[in-house]
View (cartoon, rainbow, N blue to C red):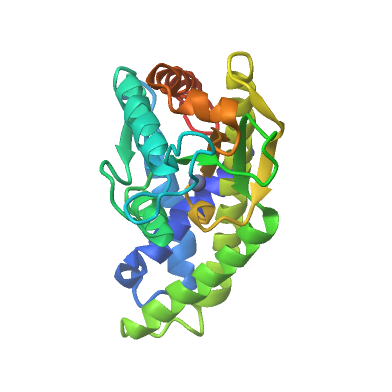
Length: 281
Ligand SMILES: [Zn+2]
């Protein structure tokens, strides 16, 4: 049961981040350690109980408003328009699936800071966060889809940073947690971050492999980077570059509504399948 420890960590992390720890009597470590498994147990479906609620997919259209993103090499296609259209189609396609509900970080042409996108996904307790983009490269010949998950270094850095920030918030909140909480919080944060990262890696592989039969891929399509938008420690996050606006053929594809519909449907099919199976379901 390799999923048990990450689930435990996730449950405990929610206690820490949502400061329910206050209700446990001054944030005692012992309280956390007893309460976290209870929270975890409560999340498990009982035999004969109603089926699991649908998974929540947070779809993030890259760029927007005063940030146009990449600009098409031939026709001046704007990345922010491509991403908004593909994500609208993706959400519409997934609306028909019983196991998934979707939300979008933006539904109009508006500017949204990267940190806000992560915060929206965390606040909603999304099961998966997918940011949609259309890349640009110095070499015109680069083309095809690629997918990014957070690099290992990015995972460690952010888990540490968040642990520090959450703890200081609790101190400001008037409860002295500094003699008891930080070490436990840090361990749980690290465990959760690792679980999140593994789920994101699985998602990245599944989606890239799934669309590869019908959509052109970049030469090395499975990538990792320390992108700010991928840094939620408790929401598995992916960034999908659907193609390169710096490549004339890819720009022709991505500026064509029928092709945008095609990639949206391919992604919808893979995401539906992904979220219906472990580690997501
Ligand atoms: Zn982009």
